Length: 293
Ligand SMILES: Cc1cc2nc3c(=O)[nH]c(=O)nc-3n(C[C@H](O)[C@H](O)[C@H](O)COP(=O)(O)O)c2cc1C
Image 1 (cartoon, rainbow, N blue to C red):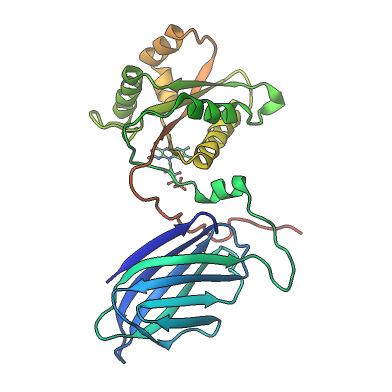
Image 2: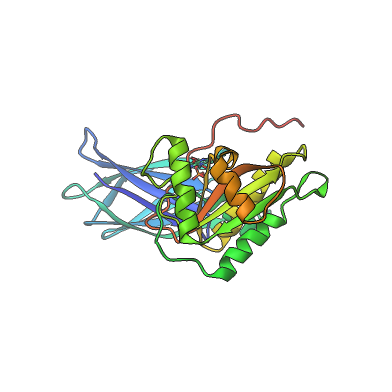
């Protein structure tokens, strides 16, 4: 059984191929799952390399497939459905059970009958490709990168422009480890590192005297996640900042940094160079959006 996943950030399309084994007629069935970041394309194409030569037995009506040796080129002539997810099956014959060895040339056709569709720019690309990263390389990020990310946070909208949040940009290993230990204790998993080895921790707190503090702080974290994604930096929101900074130890940290005020911890955004492959996004739930026209 083979399972292969490939993400084309440029085309904003994720393709994964799963082997479903042989059917009753001895054809090998593969299921290709296409996930579009958004659902703007009217046609999608990609190539699959197999471990051996294959020939086509059957494909669905809206799919064109050409097999050449161990390469299969697939083109789907249809718009993505509303949730941006489509599964295509293909049936192939081969000498023995073929394995997928690679996925290539992912492309999308962004228009239909000359009708231009909305472009996907850097912001949307970051929105759709961002995933929570839970494994990091230990290397510290350059200061300029951290500054870019926190600056994006400071430009988040805030209620009445009160700019209620503050951001602690922690790169100091001793402080990072201290926060991690406090967080693990609150989680009830002493000894664990809830920051997954990330070298940078951005703690967002917000002034409880502002009625919108929780929303303000959350939006700051959202902005920083997207800026990190655009810069190729992995991130993950880590919870329990509220409990952390309600503790005496947390209050001491704030006062040692000269941060005085009625602050509540909103969340941590851990940052670092990702280790390993990015996961695909979970499918969006049905009826997430209710259009009221
Ligand atoms: C408010 C909030 C708290 C979260 N807390 C944690 C956490 O403590 N640890 C963690 O590993 N992920 C945490 N996450 C990340 C979510 O688990 C993650 O966003 C979700 O599984 C969706 O995955 P994605 O971010 O890759 O789309 C948190 C996310 C949010 C928005």
